[in-house]
Image (cartoon, rainbow, N blue to C red; front, side):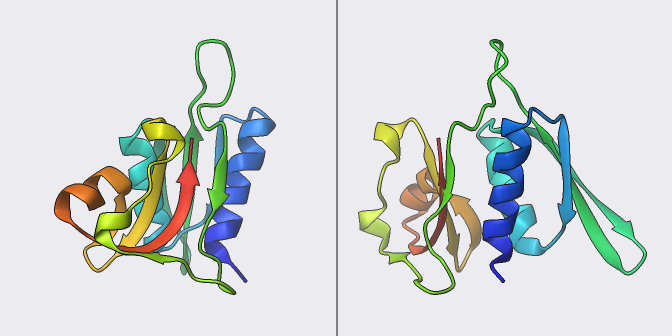
Length: 129
């Protein structure tokens, strides 16, 4: 099962349904992606809570003044069946700099701007705009 794809789909569906928040299982990769989404202003906040043995993440969605979801599109690039890796000097811009790519590097989960500054390559997890 693609846990990152499930994470992105839950956020996408909750935004289309205009929910205030969405609850989902937590992992280190999901927390890293949520930190980048919060840093770039696509979500308000997130919390990780321990529920018994498992930990759950609650993501608070962000909406614009006109009521539309801040995330217009969020899509998975690298899938379990077809991994997509990129070299540091070939990191693509998303929507001419309007969106972001989230990469998994040897220094952790980073956005495309930070990866370009630090000259980090890695697996492109998703693109958001």
